[in-house]
Length: 487
Ligand SMILES: [Ca+2]
Ligand SMILES: [Ca+2]
Ligand SMILES: [Ca+2]
Image 1 (cartoon, protein in one colour):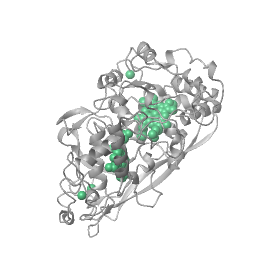
Image 2: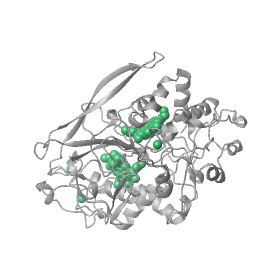
Image 3: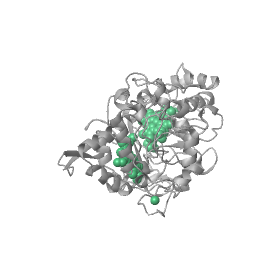
Image 4: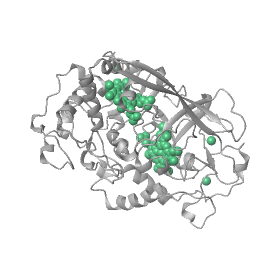
């Protein structure tokens, strides 16, 4: 990391927030919360993107909402511009509604498939939240399997499989064979913490069954991915590239074992390579391109940005299917979904004054978690979205790629991300997934059944951090987990 940053392990222990000793219940509106807020000035004085001693419970800056219910990920940012509010409601409607086969009387919503995964965005991002892996033995529906063949394609992109393309679509419109069922099975491994507490981990294995277009040619590269939470994406898009670049240390020149690299990916709008921010390997440069990719790849809806249907020329039955228009989604609706995806608010941290949570936060810093899960960033001037501009945010990500070791590797390079590298995922909202989505599965493929398992899978650059977590006593581990659950 950049040497101007204060390394957490070199700092004095985090000060207790004496004024905030009370346990807080219900909606957090009390003025004592103004106590721990890191003011913009403080962050800029300590370091641009550095590690503050305290974080505000307003994880999304002034765009934070106070909601800890099942709707916590579905709220627009407060003070949203009226024009964006309109787009938010239109976008919300199209995010949740099912696309139908063309031609249909509801012309604005037809064009589904011919190949698709699910019929709506919310089919995976249920309640704007996070999807879960399928039960062992059942076909994958709400997550997806990216595929490719070995080699490097144009601009460094993976090379699509000649028949099945770059993703398995397990469903298709009537008369068209679906591509395949992706089935997961798990192998359990167990071990014990140094203090004797037992744990188990499960390593997933995937198989492709019922192929609709002939056997899969080997070797096939695969990468399973669950759908992440939709909150705060406009904020993450607004963090200046220069700020993120400061945290990159591709050659690990400060020798702290952590490199952190930027992915450079193809930007369709700009027709040039751009910094990748979105997706588990940072393979999309903008929310807009991610949305266009999802429309085409996951639902089979073409847009002005991704004009091609998701099937390959060799999938002949697909070629005869009626189209829902050219493109299938109008620019107005497409932009409404993009705007919606940028303006979903981040919920506040809960119970920030709880002493155990504060201790967990200090352990988070001292265990090296914050080296990658960066606690504070600042957005720049967001073009077209003044309401997202100049915010101090606490996403707990550096948006950079890290080698996470063999255990998590997918061995499928994507642009500059190697088969072992993953983008640090934001941790805001992580403690509300159970409430909103009713499960606790974590990591890119949902293999971790809870927070502890997610940490234990950390390897590579995060190995030492993981080992420090393991070596903690149970009380400390619980405090750290409680802190994560407060996010
Ligand atoms: Ca279509
Ligand atoms: Ca495909
Ligand atoms: Ca380093």
